[in-house]
Length: 538
Image 1: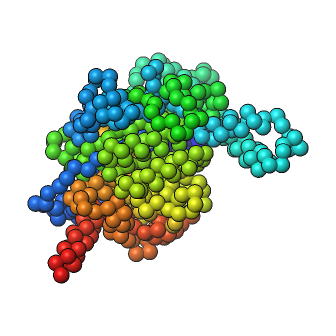
Image 2 (image 1 turned 90 degrees about the vertical axis):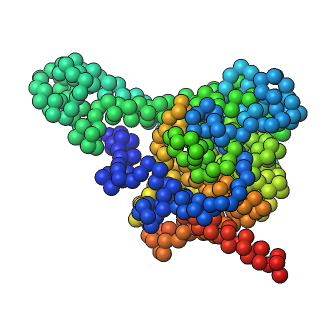
Image 3 (image 1 turned 135 degrees about the horizontal axis):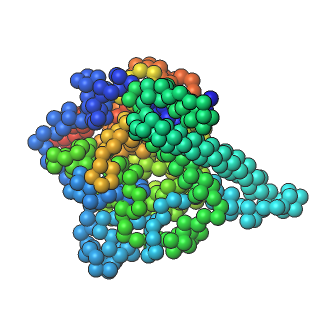
């Protein structure tokens, strides 16, 4: 029998590809609930209220994997450093970064680019194993026993996850080989590349190998969605195989060291000036998709339309395929603040933050400078009130940054599956929800694709913040955050499937209990502006 793990992989995404979902427009997240019967952000209604009003450009920093700066829908909206002369090899603006024309890359060096990296759990296990590996508790000084206990817990978790993922990788390798064998065998015997259920089912043979190929293919085809074929199934399987390959070869590999390429001292968290000016990197897929949601050109009649129409996108590359490093994130935040960004989008996260104080200092710096931070809550189906998720707004002293919006993800419908099944949530820690399932946006090489995650929900909020701020430039970061939170749409006790299992009311999953709405945010900004003007005239 085919494994339930494989079926889960191949058909989980297909749950949203039922007939009703197929009728939903590609850019559903921009649409209006009343007019279009999808839970979008009412963007056009927002712009209707802003007609005739002047707007000012807002610089939005995208801390991510990199951005395709030549994309047809993004090249017009890129931030360009006005104080830097491109390509002259000089630090013209004396900010410590040479030729930083469109931003900076904190995970690149003179000899190459970091694409994959280890997980933070791996790095912490490696650090502590060098100190305590092979020792028993009776040989540990009393003052170090707390750290030793931490080491044992990290070692247990690391070993468990490493072994589980190795097992999964081995499993998918076997499945991939079996599927390749079946496709190649059946194609040769049937003399066709179109291996339909009907064609395979007619095959008669007593040959054991051919019988295996037929049986394996039929199991897949009989469980496939309408229109699915073996080549599509193989593509999905190959994606899963590559997913686990990266996890095993890089994420949990204690012998892999990415920082040799960067050339910095990864243990020096106060080091600021390293990296290079390649803001695209080897795989800008994720960052390009995020950037398009915020600000893809609304005037070039190409591809899609971003949310905000007066944005300049600053690309800050600090997120590899693996866990980002606290040092890089802190430096990226500081760079964004120092170079004029008013909003920073952060569609990344991890469960351990060994140098959280360094990130906290950068967050506090952004707060003092009036810069808004928007962060995706994560895709682990967890309650962030109970589980660690970093970076976050809580400082080491227990106080919280007021310039922070934490974002969960929703789908187009308003039934029990309204909240994305992968989204993290938290009555205390998550502020708002935003569309994050099957969001259509830019990808490298002038492409467009649908992707899902809180990584997509966060830039929806970033786009609304940029829209509000560009037309109401006198607002502070705290005021913009408050407008977005206060103007969320509520759902009157709607019961939803809680990510990870069980049910809850939608209101229980965030501190506002609401879904962001651009039109309502603009209405509230207008109302507050009128109130302020009325008060000033008295």
